[in-house]
Amino acid sequence: MQPVIGITSTLVKINEFSEGVYVHQDYHRAIVAAGGLPLVLPLTDPDSFSRLIDLCDGVIFSGGEDVDPQQYGAEPQQHLGPIHPQRDRVEVAAVRYTIGAGKPLLAICRGAQVLNVALGGTLYQDLPSEYPGALQHSQKAARGVDTHWVELAEGSYLHRIFGQTQIRVNSLHHQAIRQAAAGLVVTGTASDGVIEAVEAPGCVFTIGVQWHPESMAERDPLMQALFREFVDQSRAAKKNRLSAPLTG
Image (cartoon, rainbow, N blue to C red):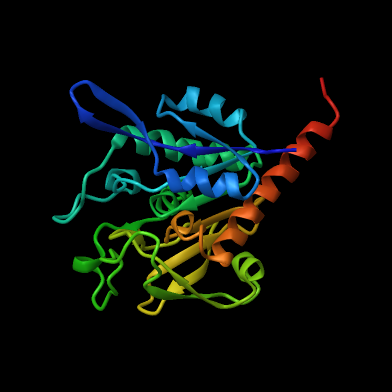
């Protein structure tokens, strides 16, 4: 039973004749390799987006633009990058809807930040200017190359998936979680203390990672294991819904 995995997207404009939905191809490649059926979700209004989530068995909240600080009650700082307020509004609502629907959720890079904001947390708008001693989190190496270590909390879901407490990750961000939301537990940090992973223990599979596992998954068995677990949990959630007795 192949689960449908929704993948959030953004909008890009190539030229005046070509504008539309975009998500990096590594996301759907990683899902296919893990046994899922990827479905790219176009950026619509919040209500329509909820109906799209209803079609999915699990949802990936993908990377992209900076998050509008208005979403967490802050003013824009000097080094805030491009934002997409419509995407923020839709995805903040979609995170809450996905969790409320009991569907597995994997939040990646910007997605992890949106997950945190949707549940009441805050962000660093720019690590180089706001976090003294930060590592180079916006790496110069190729997208799929690992560049620094992440320490995982013993007993965390990610620890169980990877089977170890230290992993190598890539790093393509300049924003990060500042204050973790009350419903999230910090389960991964970089050596400089920057939050790299969060989990929601009270929910079905709900994990946010600050790195880009989809771009490492082709060659990294650990990242392959993360996607397999996510797809397996989405398959199990689908099976449970299909077998649940009808009410009303």
